[in-house]
Length: 159
Image (cartoon, rainbow, N blue to C red; front, top):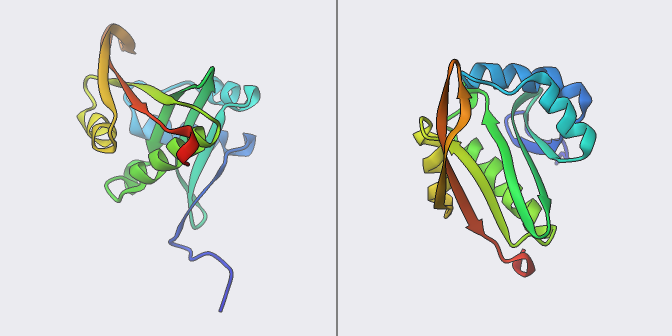
């Protein structure tokens, strides 16, 4: 019997500054309008909940959230395109939901691009409800794109 993890078994771990280059690379591959490298550096610097999905030696995805006053905000959840459609987005989402619930959050909010129905479906399937829209929320080249605002109620005493 061995205690070493299977090379194909996913592990979720805290991100650290050494991961920023890989996280930024994944972000650029996955999104037409990615976050800047500096945003990831700042998220780590200020102590947001930053987690990575490690599969063997490959950092395959990440999620970032913050919270205050009993409410969490999922800021980013991304899986490398080569690792998508294998359930890893759901795994990262569930991990983050559990993490913020353990920190006494009563709800988690997020915005999703109107042009990203796969992500919206991931959140809807987990129980997030649409609570609003933010016109022109996202940059989209020379234009702006609307965001759908979603919320999931949590029971922080049941985690």
